[in-house]
Amino acid sequence: MNVIELSVWQLSIAAALLIALAVTLWLTHLGVSRSLLIAALRTVVQLTLIGLVLEALFTMGALLWVALLALAMLLIAGREVQARQQRPLSGAWGIGIGTVSMFVSAFSVTVLMLAVIIGPEPWYRPQYAIPLLGMFLGNTMTSVTLSLDRLTEAAWRQRAVIEARLMLGQRAQQALSDVRRSAVRSGFIPVINAMAAAGVVSLPGMMTGQILAGSPPSLAVKYQILIMFGITLGSGFGTLVAVLLASHRLFDGRQRLRVDRLRPARH
Image (cartoon, rainbow, N blue to C red; front, side, top):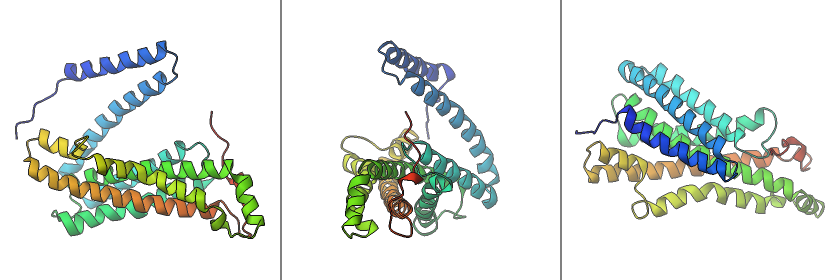
């Protein structure tokens, strides 16, 4: 396959344009230039490091090292879910719900894709396992974060309405039903939009990468369809599990709303 190499100076051009964008944002006092530069720096450092790790991992190919890297990815994703919410649940629940929901969904879908559908030898072959898990985990993280953020923020803002419903005799999950429905919808929006726009508005990342690497477009399309379905499954089940667990945590054993279990909003 004839892949065009990218040199450091070519990447520097893109970096210079990004810095120019950050300067423009700073001059207009929009308040996101610092976050943009930090995110860009993290992108460079993290991708460089993971590139070195993957090269070593591809050489070894041992299940133990694949599992350790997958575990590290899961724990980092769980931490990011909590960090991106305005009012996350306090204590271990704040990280635990996101981590558990992503483990149940993204990990299960990855193993299913590898062992049943794609079938590399061995099934945990890192060239397949790590990229698939990264795509499923990253998209599931986004959906879980959006759904939990909507759930906890709405529960805080509508606490008077929820408590009034409880006093009228509704069960906890009945009183929270509208909030929970809105939270699940928020988690599903990114994947539904991605599927609806795939091939019409945008060419998804994996398909674009395969085509740039020289794969036939027909093969790239098949893989992309499989990936889109896998992402939807992971994000969908992850959203459902996260919302159900968090909804349960918002109430105590006596069906009382416990907004004190939420951290104060960040400003």
